[in-house]
Length: 290
Ligand SMILES: C[S@@+](CC[C@H](N)C(=O)[O-])C[C@H]1O[C@@H](n2cnc3c(N)ncnc32)[C@H](O)[C@@H]1O
Image 1 (spheres, rainbow, N blue to C red):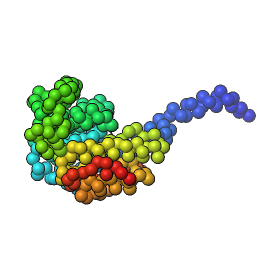
Image 2 (image 1 turned 30 degrees about the horizontal axis):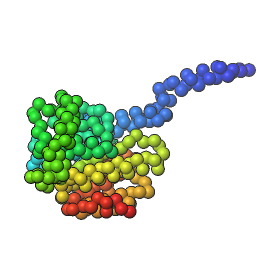
Image 3 (image 1 turned 90 degrees about the vertical axis):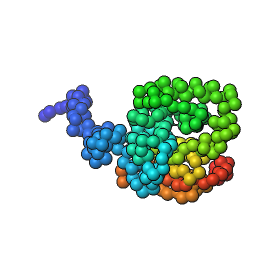
Image 4 (image 1 turned 180 degrees about the vertical axis):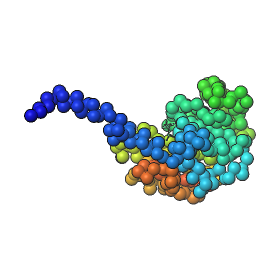
């Protein structure tokens, strides 16, 4: 009779678990399988896009005309959570060569050619100041600030400017729409797109609340910086606070829609909220009162 000793048994299992075929059964293997068989992943490669997420924004724009068919000239677009940069690529193609695009991400990432970016946390006040400064007419960009090459240099320059402006009269001009700038500088952005998401923990309720915080941060940015009439899209990891978030959106935008693009996986809890036509004179306190 063949008797297998415990040591032999464990070696046996170790050999089996290292087999590539069996590796496919663990989560990493499943992810690899799914990626290589996925239509959008393959198509993103063909079209030179940085990730399959690009197709979600294309669908959103096809349906809701976020960038107004590129008809409005010199559009200013803010892409929150832009890394690795697929949405920025799509936005840039859709607004055309005269557009101005800023990507913000907490992670370092080289932006696509022609897109500017800052590495910063959207939950920090300084990030909001840097965004406002970037889009204000006070801050002049130079051709040499082509950020795919001078990314760090640009951020440094923007931060230096912020320090300078903070201690001068110009602060009022840039940040409070004071002196001569009026509404143009007060609400300089045409469209805000946010695909922000923190690393998911697998605990639904926790991921949902984290996502709500980021969606609210995007909404505050829209209240402070988006021009009246401007458009907004943001991702939400759905859960029990969806309705409350939607209610807040309705106080800021004339039309609000929920949309699940075909490129978003069925099993994913992500959903996109679209706000069209920002209203005039919004009271931030009123928006966040339950
Ligand atoms: C799903 S990815 C975005 C993909 C991107 N739209 C694209 O097309 O390439 C979500 C991004 O949100 C960023 N993010 C998460 N929390 C953030 C925060 N507090 N501030 C800025 N970015 C954040 C992450 O670092 C991550 O890069």
